[in-house]
Image (cartoon, rainbow, N blue to C red; front, side, top):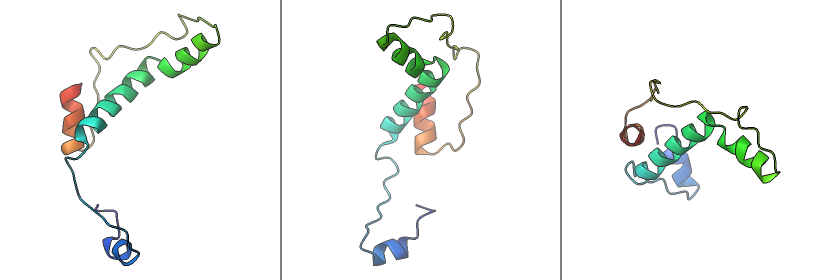
Length: 85
């Protein structure tokens, strides 16, 4: 909300509603899922397997164990992600 010109939006008939806790669980889960997808090459491996290509070694991922994940901002969304990881 801090980056939205609420006065201008209201003038244009756009309602601005601040609901910080509204989707924090979904955002935390989505962020964790995307992190796992990135580290484990899931998108690339899935596309290859669907084409009948099996490149196990090339698609070997990176485990989160012993890694440091930085969370920038520890509000509702950041803390939700932290609790899930």
